[in-house]
Image (cartoon, rainbow, N blue to C red; front, side):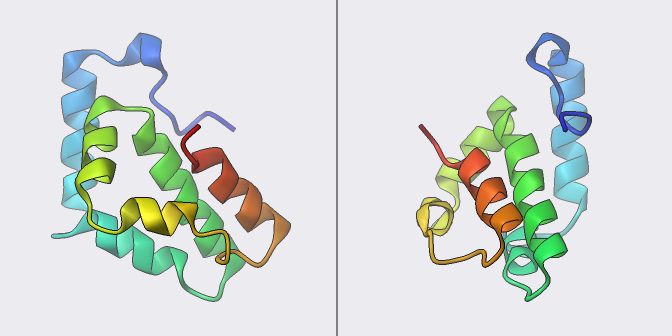
Length: 97
């Protein structure tokens, strides 16, 4: 499912700026908000939160935010979270190579 990703060939300066501004409108601390959602005991919420991280990881501004967010890489690399196969798959898709 790539319908929620801004594909690299469409990543113009204007669209990247727009998607970044939308992300920052989610909350005062959008990374923390999404991470908290991903820790809820509902597999659907967990998977969709990880898919949001995957979507922003495809954009340069998203990569910078992820790298600069304290504890984010440890959170992503922690294999103990995600109890369902779907949750584990969503986390695996996000893991850096």
